Every structure is written in C-alpha cells, then in structure tokens.
Length: 300
Image (tube, rainbow, N blue to C red; front, side):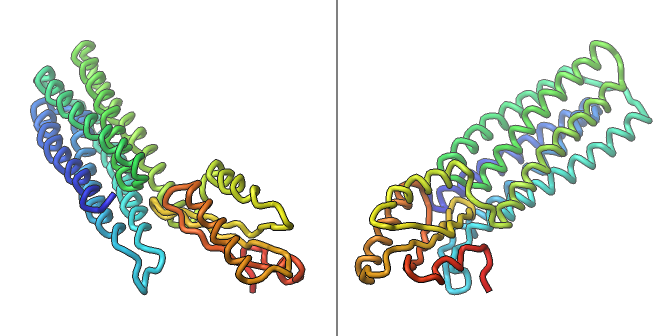
C-alpha cells in the first residue's frame, strides 16, 4: 500500500488521541482520580506515538536511492521503538503519581459522570485499534502494529481503571485508586518493553521467523536434482521487506547460461513463496574447494 494510503490510518490515530485526551482529562478533572489521570496520560503518549508514526510511514515509503540501496523501511522500527520508550516513560510517571496519592489520599468526586466519559473514550480507542491492527496485518506495517498494540493496551487499562474507580465508590476505600494506577503502570511497562524489544530486533537484522525460513527451504529442496545444492542461506527483515541471500552450487561443467537460468528460476520461486522478498543468489561450482570455504557468517 502507498504511503498516502497508510498515512490516513496514522491521521485516524492522531484524531482519536486528540479526542480521547480531551475526554479523559475531563474525567480526571471531574473526579480527581489518579487512576483516571493515568488513563489520560497514556492518551498523550498515543498522540505522540501517532505523530511519530505519521512521519516514519512517509519516510519508510521512500524508494531506494544511491545512499540507501536497500530502501528506508527500517524507519518503521525507529517509530515503534520511540513509541515503546514513550510508553515506558509514561508508566514511570503514573507510578510516581500513584505513590504520591497513596501517601496523600483524596476522595473521588462525580464518579458516575467521570466513568461514563472514560468508557466512551475507551470505545473510540477500541474501534481505532481494531482498524489499525487489521491494516497492519494486511500490509505488514510495524508502525501501525505498534500503534494498534498500544491502543489496545489503553483499552484494557481503561477497563481496569473504570472497574477500580467503581470499586472505590462502592467500598469507600480510597487506597484502591492509587493501587489501580500502579497496576496500570505495570501493565503499560510490560507493553512498552515488548514494543522496544521488537524494534531492537528489527534494527539488529534478526532472521526471518522459523516458519518463513522453513518455507524457503522447502522451495530450495525441490532443486536437489542433477547435483544442485545450496548453502549460506541468510535472511533478515526490514519493516515489510524481507531479504534473502544464498549460494547455489552446480556441477562445474555447467555453462554460465545454464547456471544463470537456474538462479532466475530459484529467485522467482522464492519471491512467489513469500511476499515482499528480495533475493540475492551467488553461483558456485561443486568441483571447486573454495565453494565450501564461504559458509561462515563472516569471511575475511
């Protein structure tokens, strides 16, 4: 999908964040609940994350150039990593506010109206999150996937806050409010660290998932005839793009033309087996000892 088409989903996320910030902040002002404050703070992170996503989607969609021969798709990892870091920072801020409220308890007011506003805001986030998650799965967008996960976390966070604040109203136990906020902070921290970890793995050129590598090997194994072999299979992923390289060994008496035709067939089959994959092959001779000396990850 073109960047212009994906950016509309980033704008949708931005719009939802602005609306929910206003609603959740109003709920906090009405009630004075630190639990609802934690919910409002996470919406500010939603806005920052969506803004970063918008910028990175446009950058990632730029075509390859002389300075970036493999494209700009890794920009998506910077976006999801930044959003994960913001989530972690928000969790710390919520924990600090909750600790302060724990030592200085305060009664909650206008609970009914405050919770009603929070529930409506959460429903908005739920709808947007489901749209983003579906789009991310279809187009393999790391940015939209991170945004969707964050919004879904926000939804579950809001559900916990609403139930907790309602419990405060029923039990009249003010300590429940900061306890809920601390639980929210832990949940947000878990999500944030998971997003940061996935972004780091992408930036470190982690290999494709095992099931995708198995798909590649199944295709290559079909060529095990007439003495054809392969080794040095390497894979990595950059956003929605996949990169595969391997060495194909053929009998030494083959002509260059025959070997080249085989590589073209192999590359076409691998591209058909997995979407958005760039394949790099290297032809070697079975009868040359040097062909077996380049299987290590680094050859100097």
